[in-house]
Image (cartoon, rainbow, N blue to C red; front, side):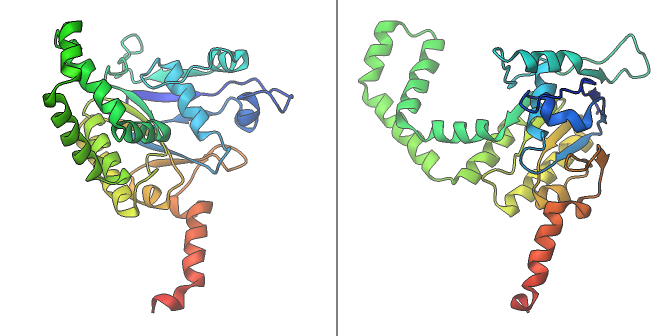
Length: 266
């Protein structure tokens, strides 16, 4: 399923090299991204792939977006961008973005991993869950000192310590990625081994093919690029273009590195 059909960048070219995010996209002014079920935004650091995802998330009011409220140039640029949704052949009946749609950044995942590993946060979360169940302030105070709570926290700590960051990341993706939604993923390979990167890609391929999900992913991982059934936009090119994964600079770098050391593998 395709929910977001296209996204057009601002046509304004800002000559001041310090004005963000205009300076990031000056070479791509007025360019239009046409999205597939899975689209990868590839580029090296500073190419604008993360900024692009955040612009899309803000424009669509998606959960997880970061709004730079004190940055007038960002607001201006975002207003000058435009998008089209899938219309199923009827321009007056565009499909809305599903409610479960989500923008997930690599730092979000790392923050969640760190959070669940902190005992103080575990305790705070445990008490908060009970407050939502209707516990009074007096009952919450009693719970703080109870053996019941201490035992539960120890169980949660043990469960968290059993898993590496990468394993925890995979569990979180399993939890957050549900059918019928649009997902913007910013470098989801962070903290994942090559094996888990490929497993995640295979899951994404299945969700896109069979479960009505659409993905727009910022990545420069050769394992992600080579496994996803995706259209790939190369943000490092002089003008916006699509590329095959094996043509990309980062992938070629890996290839040449292993070619150089080929004899060591024989």
